[in-house]
Image (spheres, each protein chain N blue to C red):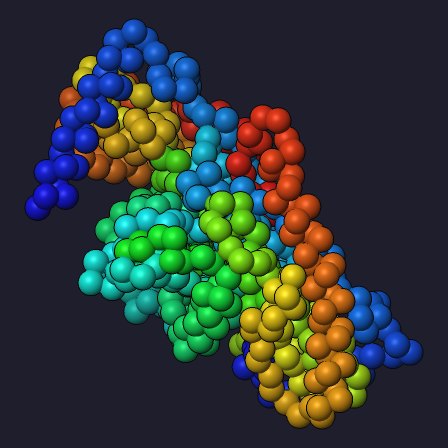
Length: 255
Length: 261
């Protein structure tokens, strides 16, 4: 429901058979995740996340002069976020580019994740821009976006209190699962994207639709915590890589 | 106003620095005057689009994606499908790009590429016709991912790469069957854009961002293997003999990039 416009639970297709999901994963297994940092030479920080079929690019700029100037705050940097889905990101028809209601909402919740983390008071009267482009969507683009943005901000050297990892959880065929794919997202009974800070395990993003019991939500949070740990490892390895290579590696995107 | 003034001074300084270097026969990145930056093309990088390619020319990176939808043919060509080319200068790609609808640079880029593709008739629009009032429209999206100068040539390479990668979807009962294809698009020629910038008396092939902002004149010439298929002079002026030289170079440099396709 979050990713597509479909209503939850409208397929007869069985999505979990003998504990295996349609792509062969178990319920607590995440799809292959690849993160590469420093892929946009023009940006202060950048990351490419390939997660399942998702391809998400994030570029970070700033702290830089706040424009328009009247928005500038003497108390700290303004965090601005723009999540945007390309018109060719899905298998269905050519979409419309530019902001829509869905992308504006996602931009807002992602911004609110990073407002908790970035030490904005160090940079009064400036802005920090987080630009996210979904080049290909396969369920869970907002959590892939947060994962990308966290790595991009870290690589930009922007001071943060903590880093964040995110994962989609949900209910499919009556079972709680992590990292829902597109079909599970569209036809599952519930989904619940979660973002957790690494050290304090604060919940920085939580959305949910469908019907879940309290126990199910708790289960999902436990599963999310374990999955976020795996995501975090990949993020750290990606950021570390740019510091480990002696020469500044060539900055390019490889899809 | 203050910003414009500052920009004018900066332009003068950049131009002086570049010109001093050119007089010594050098460029910022040690290239020869007629040398392209390292170019790279990877086709088929997306699963959701019917065709795609990621092109790189030096620091510039552009993603092109081709998608098909069903639409109503234009009244003047009722038996033909349509081509729609659009460019997005993503704010992700440069500190100078702002979010918002395409500006004049993005529109110009898309239209120059579009004209090249149309003029060379590399997409057979008649074959995209389905039935009266119905045809396939071919969307070519050019996503600028990193701005290191000469975006038109990078985007042109990406667009051509994506078209070569494109498969035409199956149409059943007037609807597209997604993920089922009947044939490759098979473009009949390879269109390549070649841009040139002039500073002082010096012409440079494939200007980088630093060279582009200091240029007096810039021009793009799009070629197939045999013909020039579109031209666009942007700022500045040039002579007839300048133009002839540029056209010769456009074929020569075009062939170098065509080898990547």
